[in-house]
Amino acid sequence: MKQYSQLLLDVWREVCRHIEIGESVARVAPLMVRRLPVDLVLVRHLDVQRSWIDTVASGLGQPDQPHPPTRSVCSPEDMQRLLIWCKQEQILCGPATAINDQLPGLVPTGVQGDVLIGPLNAAEGPGGLLLLEARAGHHFKPEHEELLRTLLEPFTVALENDRRLRELTSLREAVEAENRSLLSRLGRHDITDSIVGAETGLRSVMEQIELVAPSDAPVLVLGETGTGKEVVARAIHNRSRRASGPFLRVNCGAIPPELVDSELFGHERGSFTGAVGERKGWFERADGGTLFLDECGELPLAAQVRLLRILQDGSFERVGGERSLHVDVRMVAATHRDLQALVSEGRFRADLWYRIAVFPVHLPPLRSRPGDIPSLAAHFALRAAKRLGTAPLVPTAEDIRLLVSYPWPGNVRELAAVIERAAILGGGEGLQIAQALGTVPPRSPQPTLSNIPANAAIVEKVGIGETDGVTLNAAMTRHIEAVLRRTRGRIEGTGGAAELLAINPHTLRARMRKLGINWGRFRSDSSVPRDTPMKEFHA
Image (cartoon, rainbow, N blue to C red; front, side):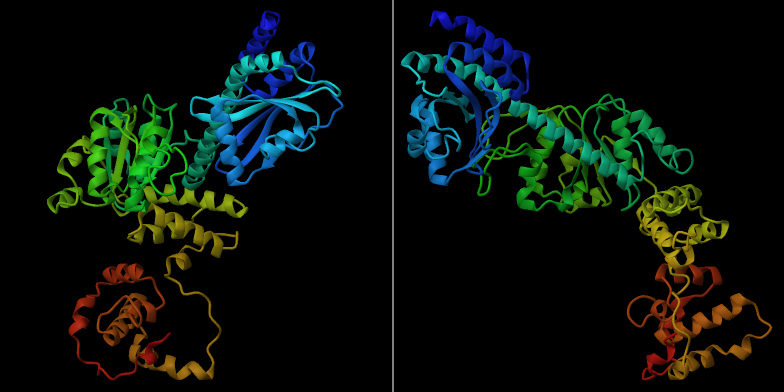
């Protein structure tokens, strides 16, 4: 084998220089052709889960020779035989047809000559094979088999380098897609975009973020649904030393209880039914970065115990695993629930509560910071115009007045939805805020003789003639009170005052507060007979 020492050195040199296996094999194949009767060099990858063999790299001694097909599909039984052959580390030598009869799929169709094949076994198990096809009229000799055995190691390294490169590429593409999705949901063009309201209603929150971001202390973001807890978590990450690392979000409330451990901590192959391969959990994927656990109050107690351990020393075990793993992850948790109440009820561990609430950040609801509504509305209006492909849309002073007077139970998320609905209703020419809020009913056909009796009843009760000489607010008060009397103070639901008046229940309550109407007194008002037909009051 001394005559082949230079060849082995050259092969190792090329494998180490080029991380892509296609480039490595393309450089190595001409070196092998000089010393071996080789016409074709193939590196093939075994995909055990899909039961097929892919050709991932090829080198040709004759450039004009066509490439053989890249994929061979095997039956599960044939794949098992191939795996046994790989583990036995046998070298196969002989006619391609005879070897393919012995192990179907090993040799791709189109390869007809004498072949020399060896398995490429990585540390994790069989990964692929190296196939050499002899030149026409030539046959491989026993010394060639020994040479192939020495070449298996550098080609195994090349195949493993390529596999890791493809995994990193796939992870990078997934992270980039996740970033694009997040930016789209946040309505931003870049991750460095400022937070709307940072100088006004969220000033105190931003001051807390600036204080806690440089440390690695766990942060608990508290606030109602839709207030922007994920935006705060990302702001903490971007201002920390981990800004260049991953930021991953997990919605704990969306994970089935039986899959929580697998999702958070990963699992080993065969650890449970359906675990066909090894899987990294969210903590491993967030190593070196920040993991945002949204709705952490929904975690089951068993998962809370394991979460406490990883917060204490950063160690954990995958489901079905026996070795302890360690990660460096900063955790930001968030919830809209009262964790202290859950602790007293025994539904949340007190020790975990103390651990994650090292630095709580309270995010105020939108109704308590009305000064942010104009800038938020303008921001969402521009985003809606971009999505709809229309000219830039700007809320008017009347639009802002309506928005500020609304209570916003859904907070910023509801505001974004209302603005987008208003942009759609405006048809690209403006924002229909009143209609989007439900303060103006949608246009309906002109009344006909068939619906005059139904409308006449409510007109009679309100008393149009009685409104002569009174203010609009007084007429509106009489109208609302007439409907409340009929519904006995019921505002929401089928047949409620909001439905009869074609108005959003929250808007109706806000309007009644402004007019000084006490709707509670109508709940005991018996002036209206219970057998009065409700259909009279349909607008």
